[in-house]
Structure formats: C-alpha cells, structure tokens
Image (cartoon, rainbow, N blue to C red; front, side, top):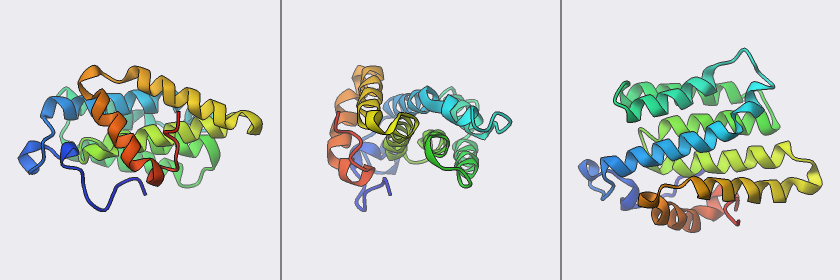
Length: 171
C-alpha cells in the first residue's frame, strides 16, 4: 500500500479541491516515468516479448503531452501491473514501477509508487550483501532527477510516506 488513508491536498489537482497545478502534476508524471524507465531493463531482460511496462511508461509521457487521455494512461498502468503478477524479484518490481508511473495521470500520489518500486527492483537485482547500497544509489539517482519545481514536494512526500513505502526513501 503506497497511498495514505488521508490524501495530501498538495497532491490533489486544483480542480479536485487540492493545490496541485497541472504543470506540477505533469512534472510528477515525467519524474515517475524516469524512475520506472531507469529499472525497466530488469523487467525486459526477464520478459523481452512483453511490452506492457514500456507501453505504460510511454503512456505516462503521452498523457503529459496531451496525446492520450487519463483513462488510457491509467489502463496502460493496469496492464503493466498485470505483467508483474506472475513474476518475482526485480522484474516484478520493475513492472510495478512502470504501472505506477502510468497511473500518476489519475492520482498524482502514485509518483512515490513508481519511485519505491524502482528502488525495490534495484535492491532485488543486486547481490544480497549489496542490496541496501543499491537501493540507496537508486534513491539518490531519483532525487538527482527531480525538477526544482517539485523537489521539495516530493522530498516531503517521501518523508511523510516512507513508512508505508517499505522505508525505501532512507537515502
């Protein structure tokens, strides 16, 4: 579970009663897509014929460009998560990261889902004694990708939801 019981109004769009602007919502989606894409090879090396996670990431970006509707991006995210169901380890987490990235179009707070699953994928791909270090490196890489406009929002969101995101944001 990566979503809190009470939604943070900073991650709810203005038209739905929150304070999140469309431009910041788009930045969150692009950042989530970058996080998911960074570990996508962990899925594709295990399932090279399954395009659903890659398509989900593409849909997230297409939604930002106005080329697909939110419902299409959300559906692509669901398909990517479906690709994860029968898998284990890094490949599973990477597919979930892609799915979470696509559903940011629907609920902005899924941005941490994409990031958290990507960190879990990096941890799972590393040798057991290097797992924690691999997760910290992935977390730091993600933070380095954050656009300035959403940096403090995401870092604060990580602090607030770290416990429900498997404590992966301790980097």
